[in-house]
Length: 385
Ligand SMILES: Cc1ncc(COP(=O)(O)O)c(C=O)c1O
Image 1: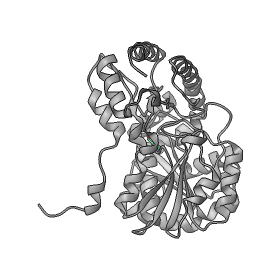
Image 2: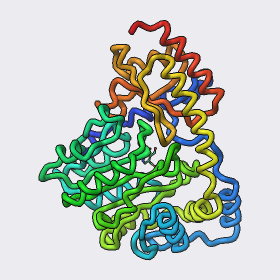
Image 3: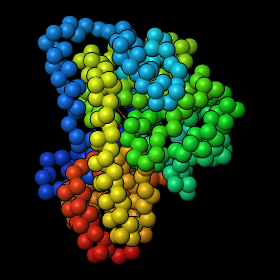
Image 4: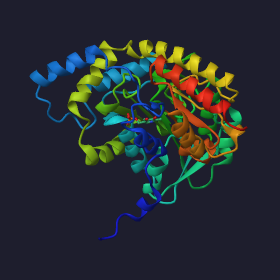
């Protein structure tokens, strides 16, 4: 067997998948590992695609995506965040947020470069950087409510820092950055010549207050790369559709990387995305009403169980501490699964800074959450602290 890419040795299956694979097909288990909405795709989106498949040619689009869709995306950013992006040359439609992230890092990373990431951190980032010969530099946010501070990010910067990668609402913690945090980070980024990559995949799933986007700050536009998509907002995980925004100068380069990977995003999904942004713009608010009810319920139950828990203000995850039990998050999660039939993701899946926590997804119905909380409470009552 010829040798494979050596950098692959440093990459394994994400911890989230490992746990989900363990419970797949076991009906008696309540699965709270899920990283995807449990709602159907909005009807208007499905209708539009069915009609398009029958009547439209579905050839390749422009490498950066259909013009109408790019315009809908830049209009959305203008309306929501007063962000000025040109549909012609400041946006690329991608095959999901994942492809957007991959395209960004393949465009900016040279071997030896460092990317600063607040942690606990989404499982999808570090492998991309590692596979390019770069290094993820994790910054602990556990002492500050899972929100990074400008001081801590600055302290992690070195001559090799190429970018900072931020994600909020956050997976796995549900943390949302207040406006003051975003403003103070903008001031920091003005002083350092690095890229700012922001993953806003859960922006539409902000449950309290509003999302404050870095795209609202023209002063850093030349180095800002923003990722978003419809996987979470419109329950369209399997449709693989997202986008990235950047300055015209950056998008020119990013387009090369994107096009030699995939030519263009899937056309049926581009048509679906256009409908989602124009004809189903209210879908996230409807889902959020349910997420909020579930979030409040599970938060209350976890606190009553004596678990230290930060109230998540966005996404559909809650990240309680299990530090009182003096065992690894992996052992805790396996016991919870085997003894109580509740599957969660061990916090260690999200880096060493997630250790001592578990991630519970509330992208599941209230009945499931109630039963899971009852089972978990019984499990904890029988456990030594
Ligand atoms: C923070 C974050 N970014 C990106 C993604 C990937 O998004 P997509 O399904 O659009 O590729 C996910 C999926 O779970 C996520 O949680």
